[in-house]
Length: 91
Image 1 (cartoon, rainbow, N blue to C red):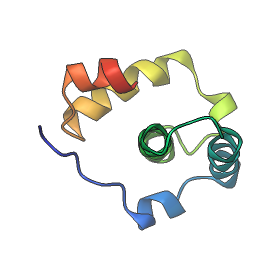
Image 2 (image 1 turned 90 degrees about the vertical axis):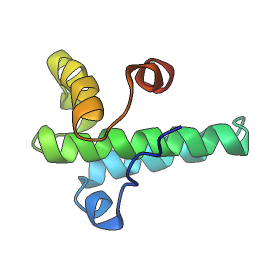
Image 3 (image 1 turned 60 degrees about the vertical axis):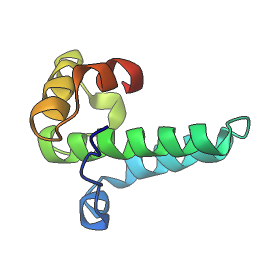
Image 4 (image 1 turned 135 degrees about the vertical axis):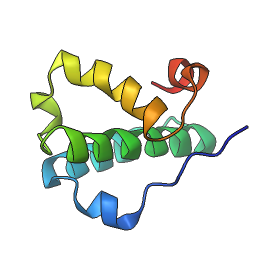
């Protein structure tokens, strides 16, 4: 299994406050998740919001366009080195 590059603190610091708040709220409110599932969700959300920060003008999540979701898959494969099977599982 290939490990993807971790998201850095510097990358997360650039994510807009609105997106940070909804990510934190989701993770806090999801009390039924197992620790492993929570960690997986948190990792996926960090990747998503870094993408939004870097490629979508750091828009709020509610302002993302459908095409941005499609571009995200390509970005994960090209820039982050994720395989298509990982993307179908995670995203």
